[in-house]
Amino acid sequence: MRPKVVAGNWKMNGDQAFSRDYIKSFKASWDSYSLKQYSGLSVFIIPPAILIPGVQACIDDSDLDVLVAGQNVAGYESGAYTGEISASMLHDFSCKAALVGHSERRALFGDTDNIVIDKVKQLLARGLGPILCLGESLEEREQGLAERVVKAQLEVVLDTLEVSECALLSLAYEPVWAIGTGKTATPEEAQAMHEFIRQIVADKSVELAEEIVILYGGSVNSANADSLFRQKDIDGALVGGASLKPDEFAEICHLCGRS
Ligand code: PEP
Image (cartoon, rainbow, N blue to C red; front, side, top):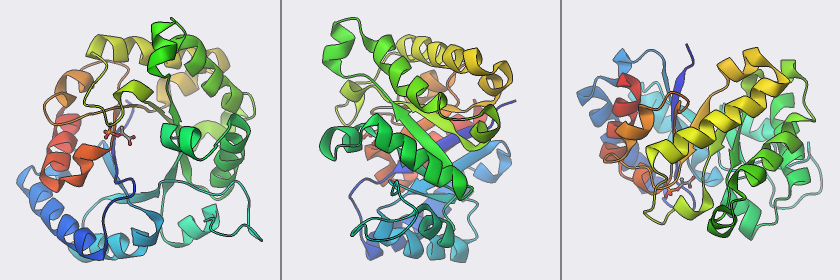
């Protein structure tokens, strides 16, 4: 049985006071939904890097069983890379994972496939789990290219890894047209792409395909999450906007945990 995962990407939002209030409210919602009961559920909070130590401290103080991840990581180990944050720094601050290849990074910050590969490798070398984001633009979908684009994004990374290196890898299918737009893929559209993605992984290793966690992302909220989580190849969600509201994020975790 695959684990279920819900990850909340705060993007470039929040500050220290927000972090404190957030974790306090999330803890209250966590208790009221008894999220502890869902032993197969992992919850990640993904704050901006500068807030990671504060968020981690609040989580520790509230005795919450929640993991922290990075939104990004350098494709280099260390050295003269001003402004970058390495995988070992994320590790040092107790992060267990980081997003790689988020569509905002690909579109706005020039994260090419080769850079994505370097970032995945840095994370794996430090024992952190890359959450590799994949997804097509609206134009690509309308041109019937969605599967081709996602396949290329995934294969370019899988081809550089041994099966044994993929144990910590998870995937997030995030159609770019659904991110922050209020448009979600229908559960059937999302399921079809998740099944397709799992098949690509199966071409590398059938066991890996059975085990790999594939999240859906793109305007997920408490109203649409349940029908997504009922799909057999959707193992959880990468949540942006709705993760900024701790009670709503907890409800999404609850819907995932019970699915
Ligand atoms: C995201 O940032 O990965 C995301 C899915 O954002 P949103 O939920 O706001 O569409």
